[in-house]
Image (cartoon, rainbow, N blue to C red; front, top):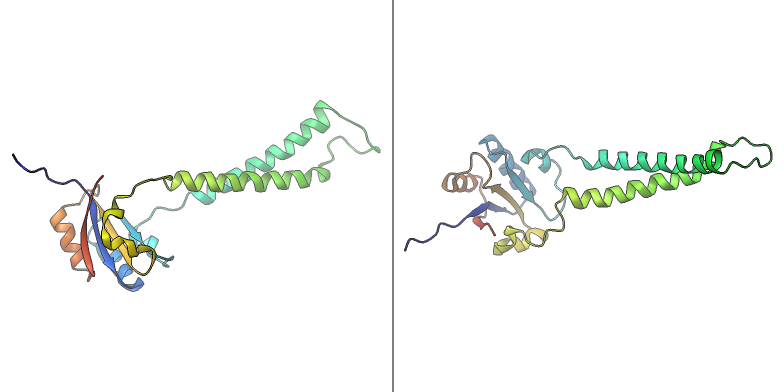
Amino acid sequence: MKAEAKQLYGIVAEFDTTSAVLAAARQVRAAGYSKLDAYAPFPVHGLDEAVGAPPRALPKLIFCGGLTGGLAGFFMQYFACVIHYPLNIGGRPFNSWPSFIPITFECTILFAALTAVLGMLALNGLPKPYQPLFAVPAFKRASQDRFFLCIKSRDPKFDASQSRRVLEQTGALGVYDVEAC
């Protein structure tokens, strides 16, 4: 019986410095690969651009969440004080907006913070109980002192042997196959 060919998630290369992983990411992108991912134990300036990461959507989501919270807080008070239960206290107008500022501010912060947390979880695809890269023994050092660059198999240009060759030409410490789950 013929042995089954293993399904690949991608091919990952290991580097020991930030400059090496940056140069490798630029070299791989120049070779025409577009589905890359980089892993580092700390933020590396320029790595997002080097792997071609799309612009972040989270700041826009947080702004929309904060704006929604501010408007909801203001109109909640407006409805209560002007429409539902108007009280003339000390001759002030029903729509006394300066008194609405503290609750409006607090609702803005609350909605923005909740949007940040929920948006971060959704955009990161969390919770993710299993990542195929965890099966690569060398990847344990990704949170300590090593940097990794992965070409994913869903890249249109992906060919296992050619992709491996491209990563080996970058001067990687090691190049590993990552089996899909």
